[in-house]
Amino acid sequence: MIGFVIAVDGPAASGKGTIAAGLGQAYALPVLDSGLLYRAVGVSLQRAGGDLSDQAAAAEAARRLDPSALSDPAFRTRAAGEAASRVAAYPGVREALRDFQRAFAEQPGGAVIDGRDIGTVIAPDAPAKLYVTAAAAVRARRRWLQLTAAGEAANLEEILADIRRRDERDAERADSPMRPASDAVLLDTSRMTIETAADAARRIVEAARARWERSSG
Image (cartoon, rainbow, N blue to C red; front, side, top):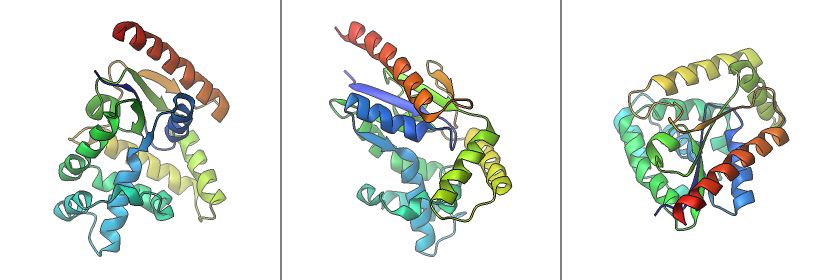
């Protein structure tokens, strides 16, 4: 039987990463930011002199990815996010990273994973599923604040255009498009503080955990 897996999906800058990290701490579960895998693939491909439009090269970069190197700060930049959105559309890249994500989800005690297709593809049987979203303008401002706080030059209007472009690309890709799982709970954080959103997420997961414990007991 699957452990207590929490799938946290949603678009860029919706707050899902912060929520996933908080849930991992609250339930003492390992956390995987699957977006970092795709960011690492994109950045690694570019560092090797490859072209982001080269699907075969991107798939090879994904197969060679070392998940232990995900702490590289270069994977957190705006450019890395754009690169990730491009390579994530390639079926070969997604296939190469799928086994790692599923193995992470299948740890005996459970796990928390955030991404775009966790509840629909990676862990469709996860006992707890959230789809975290927010208005595009709100998400753009959050990303702008995050980038400027890190010392990266950023233009709010450009970030908003990037977010809308990434949303469209993620939702319309043929392989594992971004969409809520049919049994995911929608959490719109547009008007929530970090604390309020985290509290709402914990309540959703606690209800899911209670159902899971009853069904597995």
